Image 1 (cartoon, rainbow, N blue to C red):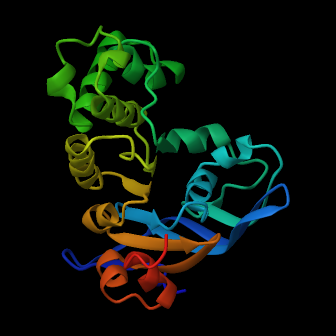
Image 2 (image 1 turned 30 degrees about the vertical axis):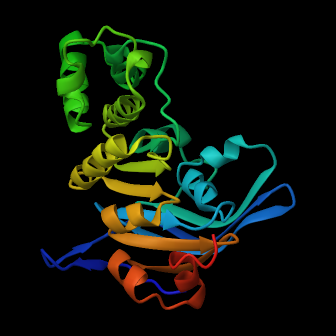
Length: 267
């Protein structure tokens, strides 16, 4: 398995990027079934990291381990370490609520609340104690603009979020994640339920968001990974087979299994 050292160089700006996450010898079991096997993965700041691999390879499990949502599944057992900003998130005294504030999540299917468009985005700030309506209004507008959907919904903020199209709902969910000003955004197959036009809009949005956020995206779509990610991790049977800059991994993979997967020989 190949990956670069603790710091990576931005070739355009010659600036080293620090690690925002790192997994060290990470193993995970569901009951007696091992889903992750000795995964060592550094994730770099303000980069888009794609995780690819066939169904059941551990992609979504790894993603949900990063914000400890995987622990909501009964009988999960974890060994190894997961560091966020240099601190182990698996420590007993680590505040999971704060982690999930810093690390937003966008799911495979759009999951808007059955509330107004405005209420969906205002939800996070309000549960964190914000009461000033003017301040909340500003956050709602800023978040919707950040998710590239403001112009489409600014005149219908009181309408139900469920009245939006699938692509609009997904961008609304991204706006909802942005409203709490996260550090990292995790995305689990965020475009798999969308049409090509909506997929393109979300991909364009991801490219814009990486200027401010570190993004980790699980995708079955290798073309999508090639289009939008800076680095790509290939997983197979719970193992991290190869991890490298996206252009390198797709053009000159070092492991035969990676080449077999990206050329369609299996998966």
